[in-house]
Length: 369
Image (cartoon, rainbow, N blue to C red; front, top):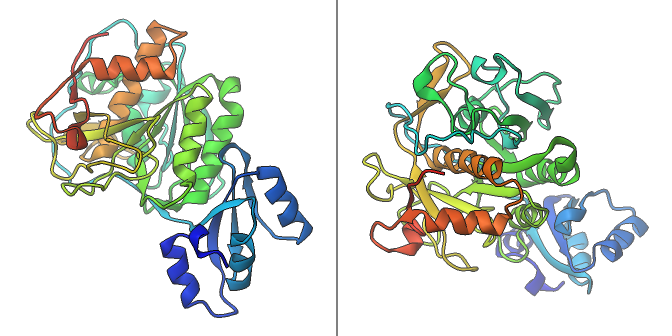
């Protein structure tokens, strides 16, 4: 057994593991095909994630010992729990940061979340939910048994058909919803990777330009699969926007995949929109400073799954779709803009609060595009 290739959490589990017990493990690889060949040769049952160079599988003590000793295996770590990043509930309407004629037309935003309710704001006068995938219960028609995904989608791309004060930031963008989080708002990381892999393989078919990830998991050492998956999408040309997390005000609390240095990580402004919310996660990460910027996140109203069809929520889950919607607007205006150019553009249009980059990044977003 090579303990240097095993995360502390998994190593702790291995130390008390009996012969009949298995754990859900991610195996990150230096050489995907050689590792796959080994797993096939010895008839391991696994889920491959080529785009993130890793595998998900159940392993016992002996298996962990063997795989950690392989030269082509980079790291083994546990399958962390992913959670939606919502917090306390309050009440005021979402205000628009920007009023413009570029409303996300020609763009598709993909929401990896708890699903989506066929809310009037998404389906009238035209149904903009162009694809729904259920990785939890495997139903065919759009639904949301938690409400979080519907709320997030409303902020980014609700049309305000019932209440004009609740127009999203990209109300003409098409919508894809991948239900990867359960009724309780959580999931194992491998299900999130299933969703990311689908986006990676199908983004050209559905013109997916932005992915909104209002969830987070504890960062794991080594080649973090969620972080690597988000980075693979970014490198594919898809703008990835993720929540910083709700574990503030302590430092080094940014969640995965928001810890990835490439993607856009969004923290939360407080109710006054004048400073970082206490709950907003702080950096730095092992890769550098995070979050990248802040957006409104407290006392926000958006779409609900039940009457009166709008509800209230707070958290970095709320801030994230604001930025995701604005990214769709930017791509609507400048169709050939790169991800790195979008990120630089956003950060250059932020206003600093205190200058503490580990709590606020470049500051809060304030501009017209």
